[in-house]
Image (cartoon, one colour):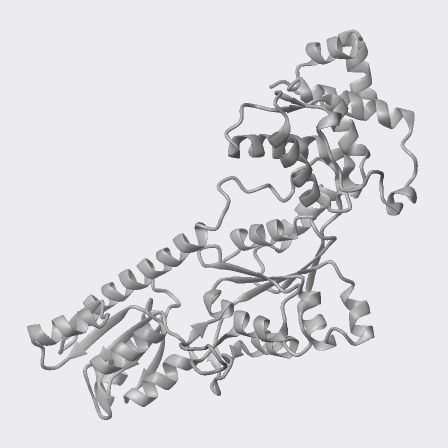
Length: 451
């Protein structure tokens, strides 16, 4: 059933009707909050925004239609079914103008109401899913693209925890693709049909970070003319990705911990708690354990988010993946630019593999984007590549020098890929016989393939 586990707010002043309707809805598997007055309904609505609402027109402290207008101003997407014992066309038209989705007269036909709730909740969830989907790239990069052992291990670890609803911490250097992996984890989990909301905490001041995450009430600060929901509210029932959480201001950290522990938060300038249900996926390039020791990151928050940790390898740790990754990126970049098919020469691939990549996959994409943009040929050679560093950073010097055997292996692999897997063409380019090439492929553990 579409409305399964949905939360309904029932506003009805008649205790008998309220108990009867609430009992029916709960028997159908719904979670139900009840209120008998406008004031109680507003309090309940602010604390925990429902998925749909059943609202009586006549209440002890006001009109249901007037209450409807106030609640719609705060959360316009929540579906509302208006109920009244004295219906009229004029009243129904007014209710619809104020935002009601349906207008029903008592006595209530509960099976019919159940069908309406199912439809309204399903429509709203599909709307949120479509809005979230608009931010997805039409051809997202596979977070596990490559043939290296470290990427195979990463894929195995990620798939093992994808279905879990627990908090996940992604650790890795800047540019390794932590955001891509976070989106993949969301799409493989139980919240895939809900929103994926992301925020990079680096460089944000305490005040800006607070209002972005938690939202604010009207008058909370100069310029806050009307209420603003925060990203946490936008991620309700979905996933919240906090990139570079290690850079989060220490004043904001305990408030995030409260969301994780109690599933409650307060907008800036508000005194009331609001309920929220989100899965947190966090990422950082910092050593958070060391940051706890230094006093720049809260220990309680660290232990809370460190339940499931995935280490995303740097590009230097997966050099053998560069040919496949580079080809994939060049193809996407050329397509997005409306260019014809562009190829990397074997020499260009070797040049890519010899660079240290301090900026990891992000830097690789930027280098290739520039090369595709500036080259007028269908091939990208070493001379078309421009790197941020004229030579490898010092971190590269600590690595073992590349052997002649490794250079030969890389060159054969790059040539084979440039030939789209055609063994005969590869052998001809290398100036050796097919049998000699097959012997080398076997020796280096390279799997031949045909396009």
